[in-house]
Image (cartoon, rainbow, N blue to C red):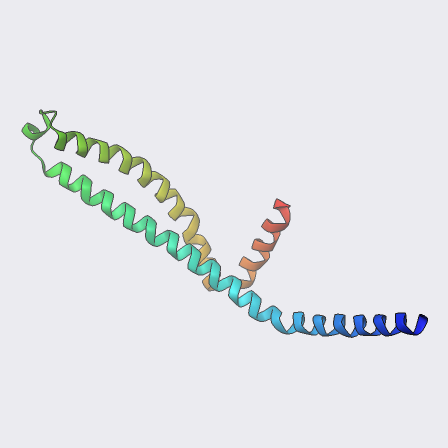
Length: 128
C-alpha cells in the first residue's frame, strides 16, 4: 500500500513540475495575447464611437440645411428628423464618453504595455 501511495505521489509531483514548466513557458505568450485582445477591444469601441458620431454630425448637417419653412410643418419627415436628433444626441454623448475612456487605454497599451498589465491585474484583484 505504501509503495503504491509513493508511486502515485511521485507521478503527481512529476505532473506538477511539468505543469509549472508549461505555465512558465506560456506566460509571455498569454500576456501578449491579453495585450492584443485589449487593444483590439478598445479599437473596436473607438471605431463604433467614431462611426456613430460621424453619422450624427452628418444628420445634424442635413437638419441645418433645411430652411425654417420646412420646420413649421409637423410632417413625418420633420418628426423623424427631430427624433433622430434626440436619439443621436443621447447616443452621441454616450459614445463620446466611451471614446474618452478607450483612447487612453489604446495609447497606454501601445506605449507602456507593462504599466497597462499591472493596472489591469490590479483592477481585476480589486473587483474580487
